[in-house]
Length: 45
Image 1: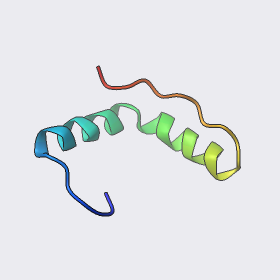
Image 2: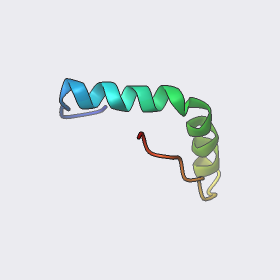
Image 3: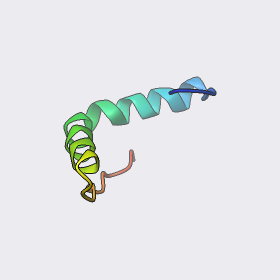
């Protein structure tokens, strides 16, 4: 997070989602950097 704040409960949920989807996020980052369309990543349920 670059600026602002988020309630602790929501922050923990986001951090859990990131951990679950870490590999997918890295792949999507590489696609985006190369100008390609990233894949959709499932939301936390």
